[in-house]
Length: 274
Image (tube, rainbow, N blue to C red):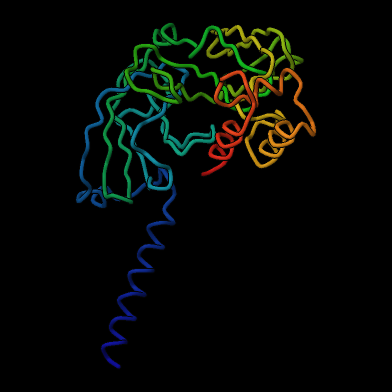
C-alpha cells in the first residue's frame, strides 16, 4: 500500500509540474535559470525585411514555451497567423539581433542571428511569373512570395516562402480564376487573368491561363477519378450497349493502342486498386 501511495504521489507531482509549465504563455517572463539545461542550437543567420515576417525553421508552435530577443526594437517574435505551425520573426527596424526560441518538447533553445534591412524586399518575387492550369484542377495550384537567394525549398519552389499576413492577393478577372489569402488559385472558366500580390508597397504579378479540362486516361465519365463507373462504361462500349463518343473513346483507350477492348478494362481495373 505504501509503495502504491509513493507511486501515486510521484505521478501527481509530475502531472502538476507539467500543467504548471504548459500553462506558461509564449513569450512570458520566465526565470533564465529555467533554460540552463536546455541544449543551445545555433540556427545561423536569418535575413528579414523591415516590416516583413519570415518563418523560423525547426520551431513548432506547440513546442514553444517562450522567446526573447537581444534587441526587441529590431525584431519581434510570435507564432505565425497564416495557418502554419511555424514561429515567425518580424523585422521592426534595420539592425541585427539574436533571437532565442525555447522549446520544452525537446529541451532546446534555438538561437538565430537576425539581420533586418529595408533593402531585402527588392530580392523577393512570386514563385511563378506565368502559370497554366486546367479548369477542373481546383485547389491544387499555389503561388508564393519567395526569396530567390534562399537555397531551401517550400511547396515545391526554391526560396523559402515569405510568411506575411499583410500580403494582399488580387485577381483582375475572377470569372476566370480567384485567389485566396495565401495565394491558392481556384480556376472558374477558361481564359487569362493577372494575379498580383502586394507586400510592403511592392506588387508582384503572375499571368494565369486557365485551359480546357484535363482528365487522366481511364476517367471515361470525366469526374476526376477512376472508379467502377468507368469500368462499367468500358464494358458497355465493348458490348456495344452504349458506344463512346470521340472524347470518351480517347479517355477509355487506356493503353493507347487506338482501340477500346478488354486490355483497357483490365488497365482501368488495376488503376482502381490502392
